[in-house]
Image 1 (tube, rainbow, N blue to C red):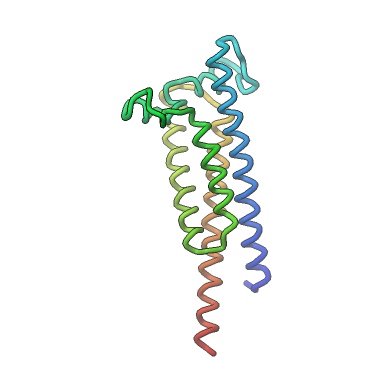
Image 2 (cartoon, rainbow, N blue to C red):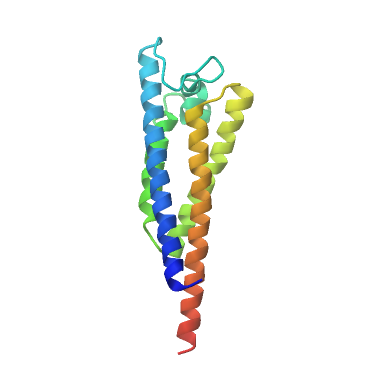
Length: 175
């Protein structure tokens, strides 16, 4: 792979990660809006409420819609960390977008681990969605897809950076 195509791939991965983070940010913002609105107005129906079994409002207002269903039982329902999952997403996607601009191998690895953790959390939430809540949430599934594609791009960017670093070391050694 030439230096030029390697750089193009690296910048494409960065742009993809930032774009996906923006999409995840918007999904998280919408999630937060729906949850807050539904808590205040019990007759509220969100655009993502398609039927009785395809309802994001049902999911967002469930016990798993705050602190991932883990914070409340562990730290108490009044814990400052027992906030809507969408709020965590807003912070997370903003962080990933910012970190994605770095071409440091260490920061890219950290970003990849962070995105890997979000995919593990997505699997947990998908399990709850399907088996516990017996619901389909279009916004949730979209978020899982954003996380999965982000992981692929982060891994790809990390490989490119490592390969570039190895080439630079060989070139310096040969001087």
